[in-house]
Length: 225
Image (cartoon, rainbow, N blue to C red):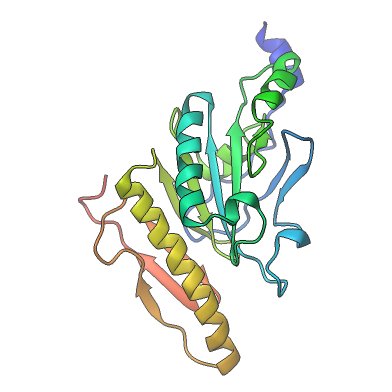
């Protein structure tokens, strides 16, 4: 099928500036396999019970990285079971995304059906919407953590190995804990604190987190890949 037809049926999303750690401004407006809209900032139904925004984990991969994306979903289901059903894991929402810019329009219905049973539903990205903002490592899963204030807190690419799982879970656990503690400090008028997300490990990502009154930082070392 010619490139002209593909381009006509799958125009790329308007360019957005690539986000770096600490940046805000990530936007998402896609449809999942059931035709439901998936957006960021999140709709009211995915906010926490008090109306505050949760931590958001975006997981995206191309077709060759799809198995790895499923591996991450299983690891996350074991760690944060409610978040994978979008039922209500307090403070955390997981948004899986399929990176599908090379899929021509006539076969998209077939592709949608392949994701039919996915939970949580998978957003179908035909136009590189996520990749243009967060980057994309081909053939492997890509993950990005967005703090409650919308800042890009962490970025990781790779399979759900033990080291990568440990790295990601430290970020998420630190953000979830800091979010709760930050709310308490704000209500009591306390000063912000500094904390090391990775005190004794060297994950394959650098992290710069800023949520409410708590700043979480890690500086990449020369030993990092």
